[in-house]
Image (cartoon, rainbow, N blue to C red; front, side, top):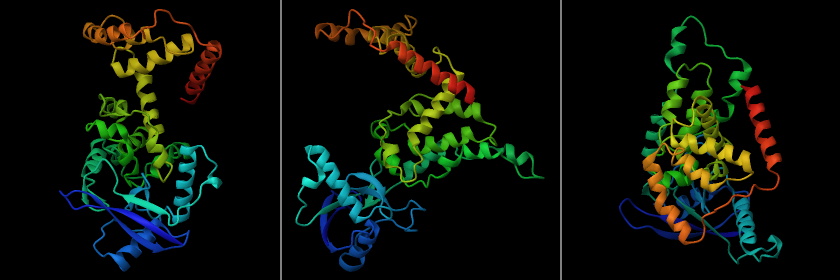
Length: 342
């Protein structure tokens, strides 16, 4: 079948543009196969990264039809089917009712949150720098027993399995909304690797690592939980879930007075437990105002409160939601399970 590939072209410090190439392809051809053919048969100046061709090295990360993926993993047939599903969802039509284009198009662009060097090749220096910032390697404790290997139980080793699958392709970093607006945030890839160190029984720096990952919005509290990193990860590492597990380790060791981020999480859970949903009046006072202990925080709430009053959006009373007892029971059950697991 004939397919048009609309490919982002750009040299460093020049404006971007799209260039189209038409190929006769099979549904099972990978996107990387198609890029290779374009480079070999039509345009030798096209630049992109590749290496293993087998979803191992992570080199060929790029945006395919708007989401970051590995070109060696995605194929033409699955991409066209996904586009049809997206169109159906946007138009509330059955996918079978959507008429195919005369010649379907696949758009390919470089990954996000990193500057373009040329075409589909991006500068990943910030990606590597942020990875290095979390010190993603086991501490020197293992070197104190040189006469034997450092043994782990199967259960201890199994805690590392998922994060060990990360191939550092950059897909999660590319799609990270938090990284896009906050240049201090280290990114989901780094924090997924950070969790591996927290969970590793051979490491003896757990406490200092958690202090480091707890620093403002450059650590775990910078994550907005948008789920994009989980959605695009080709190896099912689920970086957002790993970030959540680091947060749980921090929360187990800290109280509400340690930081606003910790108060935010603990107060939110307690208010939901009390009323089934959040009493916004108490939430602002307890989190930002630290229950009247933070004067600057209280003052900062003034303009927002005034705008809410003027707009008729300030709740003068709070009504618990239906099913509050069930919500409370669920929260307590989850806490009991976590305590047993620990």
